[in-house]
Length: 340
Ligand code: SAM
Ligand code: SF4
Ligand code: SF4
Image: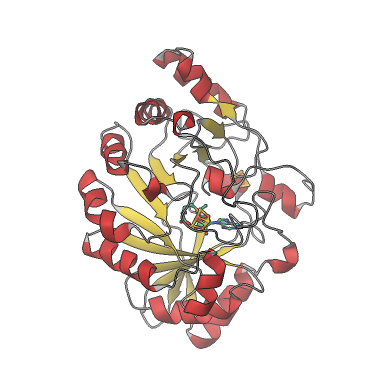
């Protein structure tokens, strides 16, 4: 049941709690399922710097959202560590009253250079994406031939800097199902939560087909046969990952099952793209141009009212509709643009 305590609820009674901010659309990887290099090639038109939201604009928007109930921020991209002076933005975001938690999602390879500064700026947590633990699989997936070593170095650097680390692994049939067990074995007992993510139909270029989705059930069954698991309770309302504990005390894993067991009913997230469009769903076809409004001279009061009204009108429940087979052939935004 939707929680009723937030001042801002949408048309389906869901609170506004999380803001995901994409700070850049560029990336130093070309993951086959996200930014395939055949499409995101050398002549791909990424956003020019003037089109990106400035830090001041991001801070204004976050401030207004915080007044409407947002408590959690996730910084994402593209590859967010490619955005210049990101630590300065994080430091400013931590000062906003009402913001209780800031996390970052990254492919990790720039963390050896940045982890200490990010921690000093007030960042507490990073989610590092790693889809395989064997070089021959990983080099194929990231489209840049990068082996796993630089990512492992990034994980080490983050831990050493005092950042809490979670690992995200997208699982796609034919790509990396061979890595489900090796990844579990590698991270078990290391005080790092590994989260498996079902391959989703975001964007228009990743050739998604339900046949390529490895379900939460299949993932858990495989791991449980070798390393027995038990279900664990939700950490907080609307947590997207189902949690499982190793029975021998080796820590826990999570599975994000947006395809086979969707969770739109508790979705409290809004997304801000790098060029200032707001999306009330990861699978939306169009966004609300808040950058345009800000640059026209919107006051703080008007900004807050606009954001509240956008959330009040929200009826999105794409993944639930997918399960009901109601949303075929819809044009969607790209994951690298909106950041997941
Ligand atoms: N570049 C950063 C990274 O890879 O962590 C941040 C942006 S990336 C778009 C955010 C997350 O979305 C990554 O964990 C990535 O694996 C995930 N992702 C991208 N495309 C996906 C898809 N089609 N299905 C599920 N997850 C996806
Ligand atoms: Fe880049 Fe992240 Fe997409 Fe991979 S998943 S291409 S690292 S944005
Ligand atoms: Fe939220 Fe849209 Fe995902 Fe449903 S499909 S959980 S509404 S982002």
